[in-house]
Amino acid sequence: MSQTPRLSPELLRLIFQYLCPHCCGELEWPHWPESDELLVAHQQDSLALFHLCLASRQFRDIAEEILYHQFSPYYTKRSDRLWGRRLEPFLRTIAARPDLARSVKAAFIRAPLFRSLDLWLSRDAFGHCARALGTSTLELWERRKKNYPERPVSNSDRIIRQFFTGVGRHTGDIRNLMPFLVAPELITMLVVLLPNLCHLKFEDYGDFISTATASALGLTKLTLKTLKTLDMSLPSGGRLTHWEPDEAKRPRTSLIHYLPDLETLITYHHHWLPESQNLKTLCIRAKGRANLIGAQRLLPYWTGQLSALSFTDISEQGFGVDEKGLLKHFDNERFRPYLKSLHLDVRYQVHPGHTLDMRGMPSFKPFTHLETLFIATYSLYNTQLSTELDHQSLVSILPSSIISLTLVEHDKPTPPERLREGLLGLAKAKPTLFEQLKKIRCDSKQVYNDHLKDAFEGVGVDFGFQEFPRRCWSYSRQPLPMQIPHLLDSRSYPYLRRQRELADEGVF
Image (cartoon, rainbow, N blue to C red):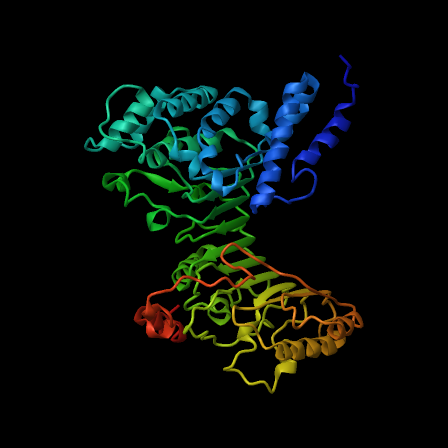
């Protein structure tokens, strides 16, 4: 049998790092693969690292450290069943191997991880974690009872008592309750045992940990820099009240209350936040005006210098949301001097009969340090706005500090000649008004031509065509399913019409 040549650990590390998308530079933290294609490729790379761990001790010592940079049992979304029974072994491993626990920088939590939880396997993993922290499940149970006295006995309480003590009996089928009773206990142990965890992503599941267990463990602060909570599909935005009535009173806390040093929040919606002086990047993915109102409620808590703001409307119809309504919440002295990146993606597909009721594009000139801007063009060039000043349309709204501009279209495309006129006006004004402008991207094939490209090249601007797809938006413009007639036009829907009126009155 041939011998594998002995290479230095440094050289092996450089080779093995090509199997990690973050180590090789393919992705930057805190980004994860999104498409099924990338997920499959990442799964294959992780499998290769796993096999390297089995090949030799020399390979194992290096490969397993890279393999444990992140907990991400990635599979395509069509293979959710493969996520089952992944969390418990991982918890047992990091409990037994503190060196690997220190290697973990990021974790990705999805609801399928919890759908197949087994009470006894979960209890065993939790017990390993407790022992690694110098305690036991019984001791934690006693501490919990001191801080949170037991309530009148319910089936939920029986399950929790059985989870901690191993005794007692519950009634009925508990499979549907496991994600809401046991999962927060496991998540609590996960974040406590990973001292170098910097990035945490939740998808299809609320970012809840057990208040009682966190208190029993003495948890007061976590060092997470990035928290991502997206696509929560549970009732009430991830809350548990619709699943087990008495469970609504069980102490639950969002992780965000333990993150005073949080720098990046990527969220579906949050209606409450502790005071944060360190938040630099806020990304909101919302469904219409309801979530925009929720975002407004967060403003008093952002006492720091927010430098990057992203808002993406993921509703199919986008009722009641446009750039002017969005920007009014951030156009004040607290944000203007610091905001450097602004991403306002309010694209949506339009049903037959649904009128795009946009109120015009606001001016971004008050944001004197703004460098990067992403906007949809319909608010600049629509049938309700005059064509006379198209050549000044971009010049009149952009700040002199702008470096990169991205323009995307709604389902009803902007007339190409109007957008082309606005871009030519920007090219002419660039040498005197926008000296820092370096890059422009546009997703309109009709607008992009050699004449426009040459005009920007002549003033030192990289102008190019690029598409910006997302999960709820397709350039194929596939027809949407038929809707109830009174939903086709947002202005004919009383609630949404009232929301628009309140917005115009400045209520929110």
